[in-house]
Length: 66
Image (cartoon, rainbow, N blue to C red; front, side, top):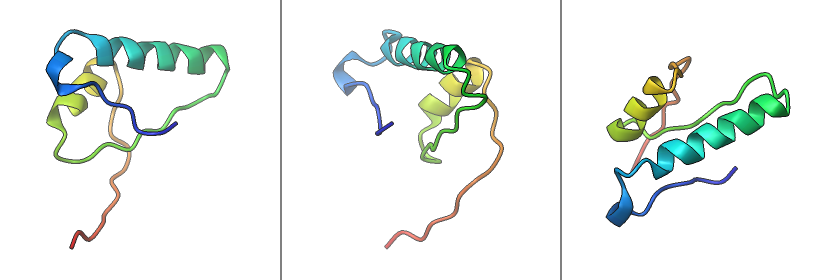
């Protein structure tokens, strides 16, 4: 799946959480076994949402930014 984000003007209304829950539920229905995400380290708002939804960090990826 390509990156997904909610327009800043309408954030905080539960839209991202609902999209995330529906995607997770779809994965269960498809018997995927697991779903992996990539999240920018500085995106604390979405980290909190994922943790609230029961996800946990299993690895970190390092990159060099110019």
